[in-house]
Image (cartoon, rainbow, N blue to C red; front, side):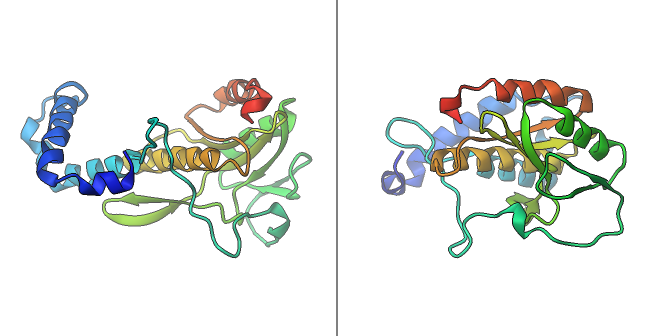
Length: 223
């Protein structure tokens, strides 16, 4: 629906449609367990639900295709690893496939394992740890604005860029971060000036090679 057409719709016409969708979702998509169904009306649940819906709803063209575009900084629309220069006391590992000389490790097990897989993968052209890159994705949680920094930015041999997050435990707020990252990647693809970008999150480090291979198999035209 076009923005101007949407504004012409009266709220009393749209509300019944939205209410029907919400009721269908509550009846078939929510597992209440032993809790009373009415508890979903509590503020603690209502605000996260509103955040998720706000992030997921996107405008559509007359053909039904998403038309979300990235919001660019006027004087700095693109970032570069050439601008990264900083000192740190955290543990680091030297790199060969990254334009940044070292990978900074917040935890020696997770980041070191993923960095090793990126270094040794035959389908990875280059990568960077998202530290001081300023690649921040805005998202809303509990009514407040935040910024999310995915762990790694990876460029594959077919030109596809992949934002990669690997973490063991997912909190409620993480779901909102990841949905915002998927929407961000879709917006960049719609823009079309920087090729194909995707976002992936995995709980197991062992899944990284399969994820890399799947995106590396995408047709070059899609990149």
